[in-house]
Image 1 (cartoon, rainbow, N blue to C red):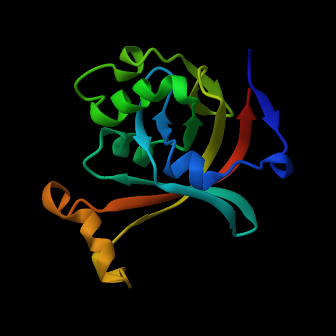
Image 2 (cartoon, one colour):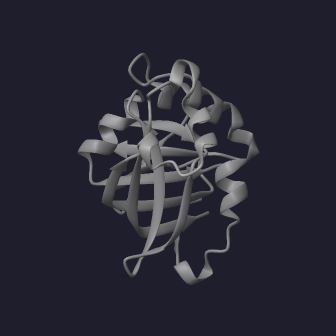
Length: 169
């Protein structure tokens, strides 16, 4: 069963649950050379008169280089049956293995972005903006606890992308 491109007016997903609790795969690069990582930080909304999605990536992640050099990124959401794939893609680096293959995922191209045939929902974005998060800009000092221990100083870069398409099965 293939994907159907949705009208954004019909997009009624609970992004708090889909992103924050169920997670998603953030993917960037070309069909032949890409990387994906499990993520739980992101959002959707309207900015600059455009429908946008935000994603956040630490510089230490292999996906960071793909986000920096590519024009597109995708957010692929899966059902519970793919939780093991999400766990693998969040705990292993694409530098060390072909985790897409190991996770049993099949790459596909949608509106210029790499996504996965096994996903239930895919958001495809064209990058508009990037900004490195900086502790000097944290208005709530408790935010810095997310960057303690082994993650000290490894602040995220925020990417804002225009939503080119939302695909659902």
